[in-house]
Image (cartoon, rainbow, N blue to C red; front, side, top):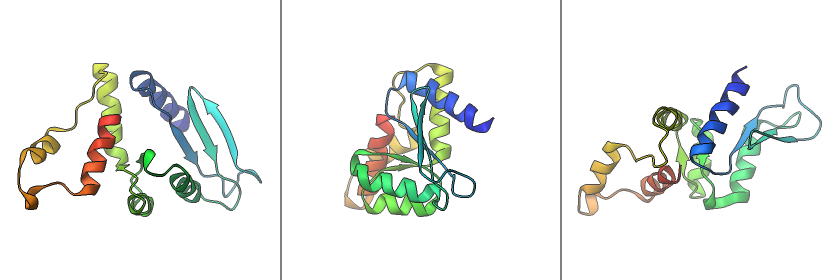
Length: 143
């Protein structure tokens, strides 16, 4: 049920903000001998093969797609891995809030949160955003 609900919510969000989405699920304990792929409601689903964790599949996708990708996760290991390759990472909770806001308001343009805007107004080298933070904000604008 939870997977179906997640796919449904992502599909609804995708209608308001068209973009490519890939969901990766664990199949390493009871999955197939080979990685399984399917497309459901406009979202690509990948199920890792037996013996391979979803984290490994996600890392492979990050390497393949590079800085053109964006990763939504709250997993620290995956976040660190993506940031090393300059791939923007959006925390799951923050993305969920954006999805809910988009669904509630039916917005086409979702604005970056006020606190991030305030930080951008400040001047001077000690108050400038880091490259990592700038990439994250740019990625949020694309959502």
